[in-house]
Amino acid sequence: MNVSPALAVDLCPRCPGALVLQNPVMPASGTFGYGTEYADLVDIQRLGAVVTKGVTLVPWQGNPQPRIWETASGMLNSIGLENIGVAEVVNAKAPMWSSWGVPVIVNIAGHTVREYAEVARRLDGVPGVAALEVNISCPNVSAGGIEFGVNPAAAAEVTSCVRAETSLPLIVKLSPNVSDITQIALAIVDAGADALCVANTLRGTAIDIQRRAFRLGRPVGGLSGAAIKPVALHLVNRVAAVVSVPIIGCGGIMTHEDALEFILAGASAVQVGTATFTDPGSMMHIIHGLDAFIRTHGIQHLAELRGSVH
Image 1 (cartoon, one colour):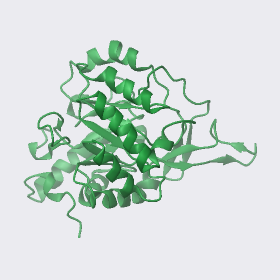
Image 2: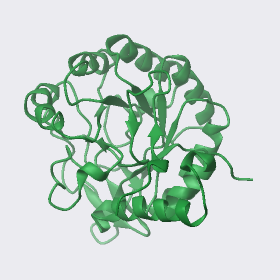
Image 3: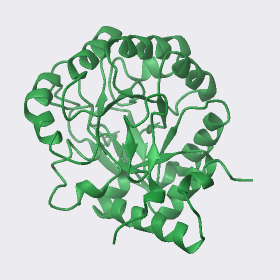
């Protein structure tokens, strides 16, 4: 089934044509590897974009095992941004991405502002890299990450320094673990972000009462899945009320109905994470469901629905 061009979305209006997606559906960072891991299960070229796992200046080993624990309507993860480092990404992954028709958005992370900026510099202009997603909000790493994402000034500093090192479209991924997400969103947009991803996982803990020990290899993990959808939906709606840049909704999207809720709340696109673990075909189902919805309801373009909840 060929989906309608009416699903297309531009995530970087300031640079027309730089990041236009054929549809608004993409994987959430950390749930789809570097894109190749699902190549035998998913028609990658039919996605709106591919978002890679987090990439850092040098390889990270990640957190100790166990790293995943299933919860009621969700999942706790403590991967810790295990990755091969930016040099290997440029040498081994980017050449493959450059042959794809679908844009690849590289998620980047670091322990310091300098590390974020250096990763961005090394990815700038690399064929196959369409955009950057700056992860300032990962709750399951011991340093950096969440510290930047909970403070407007720190979030703006990271964004500004990354912006100075790259001409690529720049998306910043916000943390839900804050008291007022709107102030952080405004600071990031003022610092040069082209789009925002709202939001990352919620902090969570699971305990084994028999062993009297944490279920994960470290006390804190990131909660994802259907359990967090109402929180993520609320945050998207709040952020959409104060910024004019595109928003990518993320958090508990399992079906096309979920995706539509985020679009009605103000999102231009969506990221799918935990659903892919339960059904690798979930993103394709969501794309086809969105297409069927706009055809059935006579909607000329999906953008007509954005932010139209009463």
